[in-house]
Length: 340
Image (tube, rainbow, N blue to C red; front, top):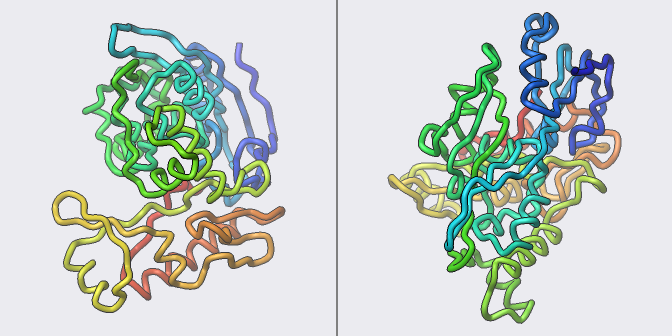
């Protein structure tokens, strides 16, 4: 039996630490809880927001409707052979503890995604990625529950339509499905290690590691992220606020004539990915603070709440950053964070 609460403070449920209230709030522990909720008049008549770890969210106002907190837990072995194994993971499982669990078992594939906040269910939704690895590389399928009918459907990797920080769940099916579990295949031996990123290479070198393992790569990634990114439990933030923009090769070349030092990474179809952090820093935002809203001193891609900033103040800062980058580089930054 689900329990619906009223007038709930959402500050504990978002890593920005923004003070905002929900008219109604319910925590789900099983898929059956969701099915029961879907049948209710409250669900049918009120707008709703599905909330996992709250690590990719900026609340700019109180939520007039129903907040659905995903608290589904469980890790199930689906199949296993000599080389790899497949796990079905409930969507409410916290992401980083799941990564740690896999690394401790010497299961490879997601070690580069260590210390990313959020839940397992949110991982495929925005195709999380870091240091040369994306979650789509290990996802077999995603199970979702139709929020209209309550029926369950399995989406293959291809049907998820993964892209850069995108999936079908952020586009055509946004707000239409609740992700209940994610099935992933992990390697048990002959791991395909990805140490191409310079930061990982340098950190492994500093750790005196010449033969990396999934454990040492995970340790290196954790060290890098702790060095560069603020801990949400200390300073409110939602990680990278903007996506790294992708521009055409001719646009990049024209910018390079004006800014010879501009970094860029050629990707498919003559497109170039430009680091948003570099663009923001060039516009003078790094380390800036406006009341309790600010730009992190070590990573300009991260906006922070030093204590009592409102969601509106963070949003206003983000839009000012976006405008300045547009004016200086003719590049439009797109928020990676879900703004409510």
